[in-house]
Image 1 (tube, rainbow, N blue to C red):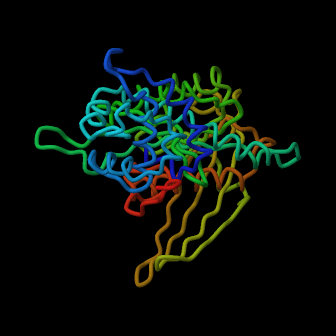
Image 2: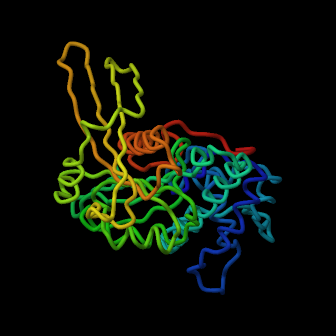
Length: 351
């Protein structure tokens, strides 16, 4: 989870300190020399610099400059024979610390950074719907976590579209249990006015109602055949009578793909769709031509709580495409990091 922090400089280390202060210290008061925040900051700087073991975490601290250690909050030992935590100390702390609390602290830090970076650019305009923050909820198995006596650990994560930042994540027991973690995952986040995207697995009426009514957010939910009632209702809409409202195409990786989108208002007095707060039905038609293969065609359906005046067809197409992009990136990175490939280490300040 610390890899998600990306590069850290002196200012960012100072900004991160209040978030780590919220993590409860599992150690007894007696015998503490280094604060929990200082140890976690050493680990954070070491991890984003490429450290992957307890010994490497401790070695980073031994090589760091005195000025950087002062910013981190490392106390010099009275006899000056050791200035940073030993591997045994780091191992004991990381083995005992509350992982969920640490993950929440990192997620809160990243969420505040992302909000600060995006909100100043948001100015009232007729196209304000294009500037909504969009977050994808997606789950994947954690690569390298399987053991002889246990299967891979599974994580559910809330990730921003565009520049991928993991705002929150939670470990779930199995993929079928993701839906029960939907609300606890998003509860700490400020989602007012945000658009949340997810697939049919999380299209549970109670979760959708909570998202719209309690968190004051909007949603774009992709509907697949595992939601047979809603999927049949969407497929039965008069799409042939609706003109294409937006198209996009692209070429890459040996294939050409084109996408067209249609939207249809959902009339409550006509029965609506089996989704709470649904305002628009969406159909995305994809045509893909792989080099040397036949062209394939596919129609994907979705629903959203956004009205037509709140989001145009191009906005909805971008949100759906962005969710697919998050899924692809997570498949590649397997949640090792929220920003970059962990095999490409970055160097922290003076690291």
